[in-house]
View 1: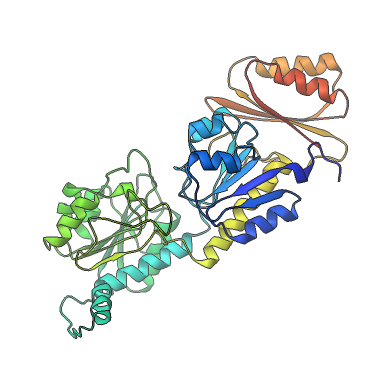
View 2 (view 1 turned 135 degrees about the vertical axis):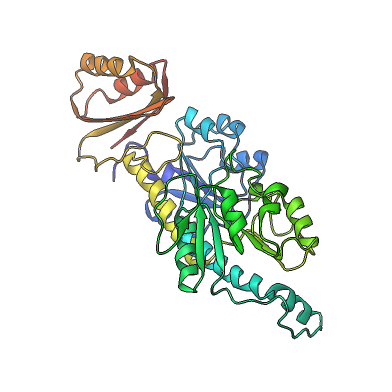
Length: 408
C-alpha cells in the first residue's frame, strides 16, 4: 500500500519487557519494532530510541523534558501500564507527542490481589508462612480473624476501588469509602465525606488513588494515628502516597496490626538491584515488588489496548484517550484524500491563516476537525490531492506550528 510515509520506516522501540503481543501487533501493522527487556537510563535510552517514531514503556523508564528535546522524530509514547507520572507530559505536548496509557486493563488483577491481602493479613498468613519456612510450627488462633462482618475502608472509589468494593461485599464485608469526586456507590457501599471518617471506621483501609501533588504523603503519622488499634493498611496505589517510615513505626509499636505494600517511594530499576525499605522485618507485613497488576491476563490486555491506540494514532491521527494533548476521534480517511494533522499553540488567528493558505493554494477541504486545550490545539483537515508539498511547507511556516504530519 502506498502511504505518505513508508510504514516499514516507522521505528518503534519497546522497553521493559512489554508483553510480546504488542510487538506482534505493531509488526503486523507494518512497522519496524525493536524490543529491550529492561529500562534504560537517558543516555542509553537516547542511543536506542533517540531516532524512534514511537516509544513504548512501563513504569521504570523516565521520559524527561531533555529526552523529548533530543528525540525530534518522536510522534507518540505508549505507557503499557496505568500511570503516566514517569513521562514529562507537558514537554511531550509542547512537541506534539501524544501519550497513551491503559488505565483500566489491569483493574481486575489489582482488585483480586487486594482481596487476597485482606484475607492474608486477617490470618497473619505472611508471618505463619515465613515461620514454617524457617522450621517453626506456630499453631494458634491468636490474632486471626474472619473477614466476614468486618469493615473495609476504600480510599479512591474509581475503577479499581469500586471492584474491590464488590468483591469485598461478596465475602460479607461492610464497605465504606472516600473519594474526592462524587462517585456512585455500588452494592451496599457507603460514602464518607472525609478521609478521617474512613480511617476511624475501617478495620482494613485500602488505597486506590493516583499519584498527584494532592495525594503525595496522603497517609502519614497523623492519619495512621486515626486508624483503629490493630487495623490493617493496604497500599496497591503509588509509593509516594504513604510515609513508609511512619507506617513502620506504627506496625512495630503495635498501633497497627499489619500492612500489605506493593509500591514504594524508591523502587529498584531492575531485578538485579537490591531492595530496601523501613517496612522490611515489620510484623504481619506483606511486601510485594510492584506486581498488583502483573498477571499474564492483565499484561496481555494492556499490550493489546496500548498497541491498538498507537496503531490508530499513526494510521488515522486519532488522539482519543491521549492524556496530554487534545483528544480527537477521527473517521476513516476516504481513499484518494489527504489528511493534514496540525498541532499548534492555542492562540487566536492560526485557523484563519490555515484557511487562507489553503484557499490561496486552491486546496479543496472535504472535512475538518478541531479540539483545543488551554495551551495547544489539534486541527485535522481532510483535503483533495494537489499542492501537497506546498501545503505542508506552508503550514510548517506558521510561527505557532508545533508539528505537521500528512496521511494518505
